[in-house]
Image (cartoon, rainbow, N blue to C red):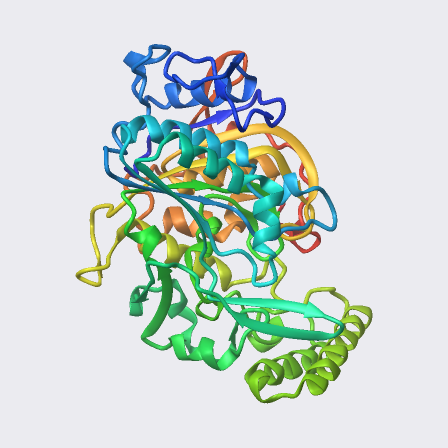
Length: 484
């Protein structure tokens, strides 16, 4: 459950393992054939032990680290970061969650389920992501097929939670419907409890790239803030959050908190920025610019009228948008267009809304509970991280770390320190810790910097957050003013 329990920062990881389809020689596993123990598993196992999970049985055949979270017959959901299937600046390893982390969680979930239950891997990637290509690339389909064969009484599923898919080809954008969550979605209106309510006088300006702004306005206006959240995730007995540690041009970083943007079925429920320049009460870009403004107006027209436009007209508008996009970047002091800077005052609010829903919203009473409603456990993939223009075009940065824990605010605060950010500039962390509307840190200290972190390397150390050293990440260009 959420608490100020120390999170664990593992620092000695060397590489992603290549043993996806064989068992490991640890006493708690009975699968064959086996291979020798591995640095990756050694480190993560030790991390669970130091976090206090079934310590008395560690290195015994009855070790069951998830026994307090999972019972026989439960539904286990694993939420990776499956944003896109291609990285144009680095490798896929700095872009998405590596399958080794998913295997690790499944292996120990199987022990806790005792032969009966359900394990579901799911995410809502970017609308242009080729999900089938990503799945084959990461071999997650073959891994789940192997588990299905070996554990016939446990149901394994892989779900693409998106309701809409985009395809762009030859200056045309085609929009297709997708099945999404087979269990359906909860339409959740958190009304005045939303962090967005503070800026509802600007509700007409809420935007998310590549979507009809009229639909956004329908779901986010004064007194109304609606999200379309996966039933599979909210109905689970436990959700394992497995984000990729990387930079983010709109939110500064992506980690435990940001990863749950992907539990929403339709992007038009997710305000990412506000129309216009900072001087116009927007946060889409900093400085006024003729071409950027024309681009924004034309993009709104395109997505408002998409179904009415002929293919030829769609192509011509997409060509004009591409031209205006380039002209806007050439003629402006800043190269920002869709909220990719430290002055984005919108997306952090959406992030905290979704996390409050995940942890505390009761879908039956349609109200927030004082006590945590569902279990969430986070294991961050920080072995190969993403720096510079994340989350979609990050460059590879080897860090060799994993972060384990239950409190997403403290996890993301640790990520921010590793990247070299000033925590006060990362609003979802700062406001998530201090704002009274945030329910995510029940027992706050006077300052977040005094929270303690367990660090595992050759030795075990306990350090305060303020003592965590930066790994000198290249952070996004328009977040440089947010450096420590």
